Length: 614
Image: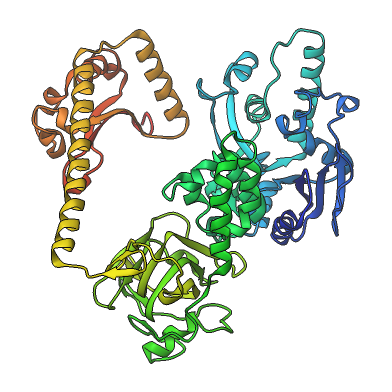
């Protein structure tokens, strides 16, 4: 098996080197090269063979378009230079520098060579009219296609064909016969589809659920390290932080519930304060926020880990636990020397937990959680709870179904409390059934009696006024509870009223809308695409079941006359099918497609067809 594995880079640092090492470790028998863009000077790349190229592509007969971004716009240019430098290979595996590879790539390459597959690419499909690059593709190709090219395999003959076509288009453009230059993601699949080259999807070989443009992923994020997967766009820790700070209004950080604050929650403020200061300095009102940022930095720096030596407990132990005593097992999460994999391990159970007694009320500014190295995905949804007595608990932080916390001690998952959390007990509880196992947990703060200026804590068991704590009464508790309940009810009532208004407006449009010729043409085009993709049916539209006269009961139970319950325009769609599509062999159906809270939700309207004419 003779193939080239090329890792394409525009710069070189420790994080990109780590991704390159991961890529090359998964294509062991390849001729391994780094494809380096040296437009702005040489890159300090070691220890790999390097194929250099620059944006000065005219000598190769390739248009330099757009100015200063041609190698980004024309991602296919780089592989042509690899092919020229190393021509005697069966195929070429190309990966961008922000792709994380978590599986052996050799079976994919072997299948391409054995079966004569010319291109492996991701999300190959007919180009949609709303896609930004559709226009340039439609101007050149009768049937434009689109694909994501973060990672691809190309045969030698496919590369030669693409190169010759780019050279031809360059001549056409320079002669004024071509008005628009096609973006690589429409050019590559459209040209190879038109030339009847053989395609295979990346997801036939790898888990691609995180192989997409956005969101950006930290190199330590579990989504960038999922076994068997490819992930994009993966950045080193500092590059990721800079990207997050640069992409959002820095003033959002000062809102504890703001998007930027939530995105940066897994990191220490010291990790990104400089980037945040730089962004604030560019704003007219940024200087007014600098003292608040400096104060937060000082608070973080003064805090220390208060957990070592504190008594801890886990909800259960298992045969994988180091100790069968729950207290000794729980202490593994806070011991100074730490463990390589996990500090404690519960049994499989509903909502397993780990908790610690601080001994006295403390003011905590943040927690740092380091996940287990193996099976980090097991820590999905969890909550942090606080208590003054170890019996009555309140949730102070919720981690949803997003990325699991990092397993890297140098880049822990951070939970920030602003204002500081006052508590004497702390508990981390998993929200579903499973194991709970973490490497370590740290809580940074100070004992309550060390806090110089007392304030009313969001989870205090009393009230602080000046330097005096006044007693908390039962009346206070019930009054606060009633106030919170009233606020939640008002918010729920407002949301329900808005939902009803939106539904009424939508219902009126459903009843009055007339199907146009453009609607019918779009539906026919979607049916063709679904058929070409090997599908057996297409969901044309969906609508809330409450719009049906019986709430969707006949549709859900497949009762006779269900067609008559279709509301407004959906009844018109049925008549359009009956008049124009039924005789052609197409079927029409409707079914409930979701059941929120156990009740019928949306109804989908489907056009279907047989698998074959036989």
